[in-house]
Length: 275
Image (tube, rainbow, N blue to C red; front, side, top):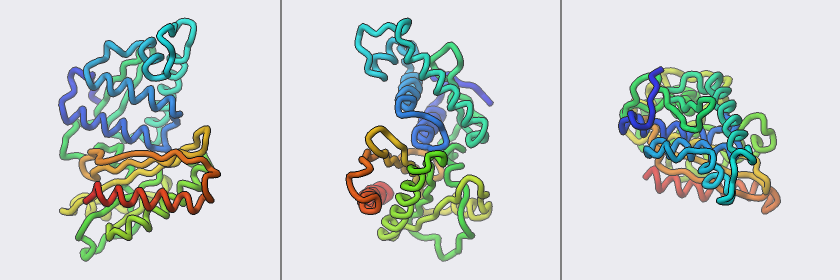
């Protein structure tokens, strides 16, 4: 892989790194807590902006973790602890689900400034493999008469080890598919990770002339309930079109009613963004 620092990243490479970061933050395949996500987002964003010199333990403690201005990294090891957790999570991910990703975000021991590795030159005409993998497995061939209009490829990214979140995530995905279809948007669902893609279907979808979007969905357990996250991107280029999340307490409403309401609201936002 070619390694790049922020100062040597061109526009296409920067776009590819930003897309990779967005996917890492929403995916359930990376073992990151909410605190880890804030850390990773901060160090990558600052590096891409050319502000790597600001990425110090003190700055991270104050700006990311909300420590007071009297924060002393030598006495409070929170930054070192979270950096270690992020390194381990990224290493585990790139050794498994992300083994073929086109972009790798690397946080080396002894530094909080990330470097970026590319398996091939990033191009605005290519979809970063991290996002390509998210929508690479499609059920069944695509018929010729289905080549009109907008297409959404939905990928469920909830961590499969979080059984309660996974169950709610499956309900969320089902409700979203139904709600989005009501806007006359064609919907495809990627199979679970253990199933392989239908290669020809993938090729046909990528080369379609109309709009094709990838919708990544994940549900995360948080202290007060669940976070329902989503990210909509251009299927071919990986460009993020829209993203967001909703935090809901488990007991706000019956689970089915709560999830149906969230899905209906999200479907309207997707239709507006994809339109």
